[in-house]
Length: 144
Figure 1 (cartoon, one colour):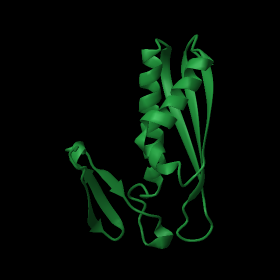
Figure 2: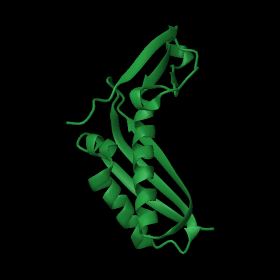
Figure 3: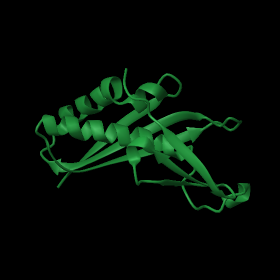
Figure 4: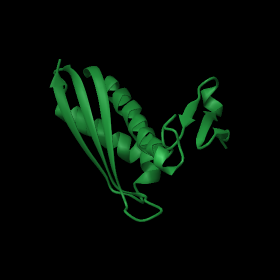
């Protein structure tokens, strides 16, 4: 059995919280909400971090796989867009991930396979989200 993962969220004031994780010693994430619902905009809204987690997890897996495939990648950006339900609990009803890969002679088949492996096999964030929300992926390759 693996070690448990821990997270801690501590109220600072108003709706402003500070989050830390066991693996993130010395790193904090500021959490807050919009002023119209009692926040001061001093940090990221917690629900937005789900998109960041998915995009970050997929990005790390995709770049790792592309490097193993000996693709010359100079840059990788993952843009995540989530559409939310109109009614509470306002869950994501659709997520789109756009991978923008910059490099020299990057093979489209290698990119497609890397995204597929990350999504279907390696990324735990995708594995957790995909049973409850459709996730669409697309990519662009920029020579450079």
